[in-house]
Length: 438
Image 1: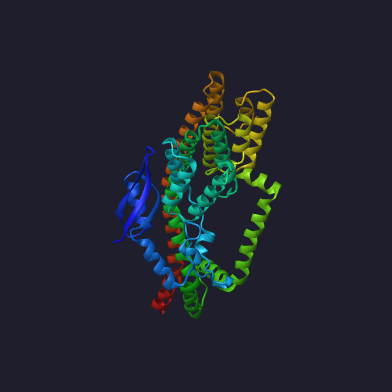
Image 2: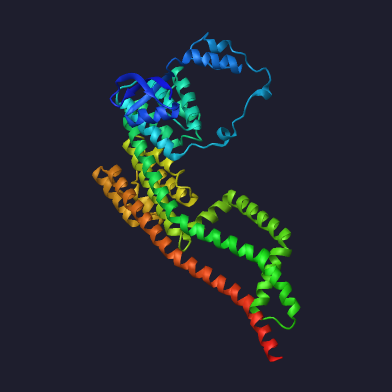
């Protein structure tokens, strides 16, 4: 097993170094992370000479950490076609869990008194996700050149949302960046927990639906057409259920080349319509009014609004800028318009609770608690309590919805199976009666 000479920081900011056996860099990071160490650099013991020999044998270029290093003299492929393209890195996305862990580590390092560039270097070495490691490397280089952290994050808005960037900017300006990063980590972790709970609750019903769809499609495409030939040879009038089954089977087997483009075109038209301003307003209004899923969607949006606004206000972000940020994260233009109206009212000197209550889109308990928070100067705490309450309510509703969906889907599958069985068996029984009678 290779031996690595590493440099790292403890959680209290103390620089340490040592030797560790590991199968590779990934296991090295895992071992040091388990011991509470943040890796900043490593080299395989005796690895400089070995790496140089390996590069010479391979005839490939290896970047050097020092200008004029041996790797800088290695031959470079002259053709652009000799470069390897890692498609995984091109299409890889940064996971919310990885972003939350990185933010927590960043805040811990800064709180321990480690300089920002050293902290970023530790994050780069510690990070296992290739996409996030690349982004952090670019941010580190811009910070080393004298740029602010917020500006460096702003170059990667697909990874870091406006909420993240604005909070970091305020943290840099106020000298409380470590506190802001820890609050951001708490916010991201709570969002990940809520999303995970909702996703986990919906996996089983979705899996049952997909299995039922596949089984019925196979029956319609392969089993029923063979039974149709048998029914035609029987002659006579077929039962109603059998005729319905044959009609459905013919639709699947004979008109698929029409139905498939029609379905694709319908999906394309719907997506294009929803992208228009009028379409987005109508669709978002429909989603909020939907009988079963509408209340859950509303609660999720309200919870996200309350938690994000609380996080921004705790980080000393101005209330108008905070409202401008949160209106873009509710993902519903109806709610965004209500928040924009509230922002205008606050700018004119009104309270926040009044316009939200007038819109009729936010629960009365929420607006009541916001009003109390504004009067007592504890708006951030009240918003946090509202977010916790609605997160719990969302989890309870999703659990109840899942518990109801399971028996409904089982009954539905039973009805479809019964329909198939009766549609196939009824003509066979009729044929037996004819044979017995003759």
